[in-house]
Length: 302
Image 1 (spheres, one colour):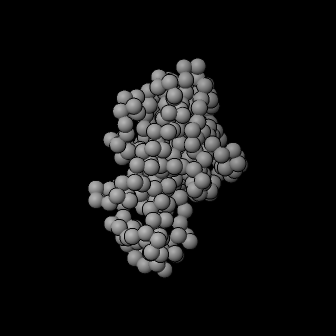
Image 2 (tube, helix red, strand yellow):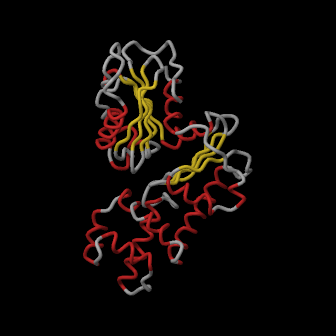
Image 3 (tube, one colour):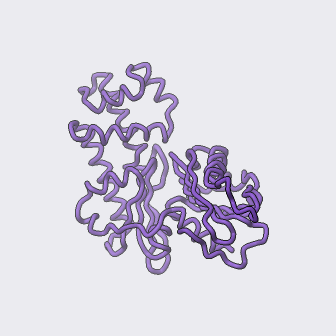
């Protein structure tokens, strides 16, 4: 979406519109001038609400700043918080307590349209039409919209109780295997040895790592699971669990198999080639991304 069809009802105090996609690992922002001209795109650290509103606002602002070039049109105002409207799609925004806290701590943006990253990604993927979406990244959630506009959500319960098949879930399972190998409760393998080196190489280092680890930290172990899969049955078993989780979500979202399905997220993209035909036959190419979806939803509020 290079340009926006900005409505004439846009308030005069709004000079810029920013669409933000924030997860447990990173934040992306796309910024437009009120004329509809694309200003740029930027990236920053995590803004998923499970890591707190303060961090979310900090990285939202940083992503918007990096999206704004120094050589703006000389006739345009400089983008600042008080003249920028936000369309936010954030991981964890489906939690009403976290969402309320984010809005309560708004540092000065005059207009904030907040949704879960699943909803904004769903709208972007299917251009607002009927369809299903599964995001498997640091966390995992699925959402579908039927022809009548009704929404259905699967997963999104948060780590560690939910997010099965996500990067954080894969990492947590790999850490458990490594703990068991160190205890002698199972034989060491290529995966547990790689995980042990990743966290510091010793029992004491692993204990310290676990004491400080959060969702994002556990997700850093997921690439090792995929890297070891060609030679390690334990890694293969973990990936099979992730595949099964994705398949279960797809079935729960659309048991009639009538909706086009988009699979997104770093882990999801790595699982696609391992999915059965019953799922891959339903997979469609995304028409747009989560920032496009956030922009679509934001424009509807004016």
